[in-house]
Image (cartoon, rainbow, N blue to C red; front, side, top):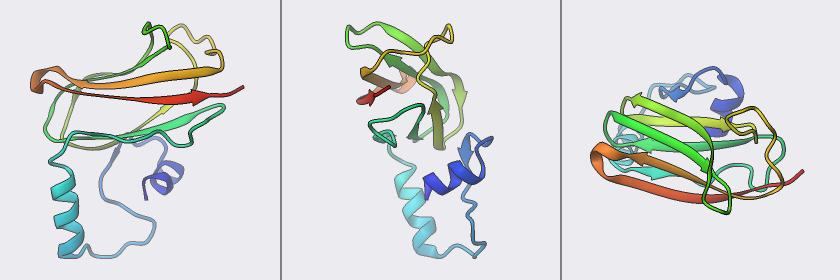
Length: 131
């Protein structure tokens, strides 16, 4: 569902439960989202391998300071995708394969790391950029 959301509402950073087909939510859907939103989750990027861009989905269990960064294989931060206060919820971030200076990153494996320092929450995953 998040992929359709990204295609139809690319300018919206947070998914508000809206869909392509407007139907009243069921109790099951509300319970599932409520249960899911209680966890700190960094999903695998899509697509992976990618060129020229990829989507990174994450869930925040509570509001707070959030950092989402991309690192090269040497562990050097090349790009900060998210830095700041975010509300609880489901988010989708796009990375266009460029560093903080706007220079295209080389083909290779990169790590992306989601942090909420106030809650001591950290998750890291890897992704592959192919040119």
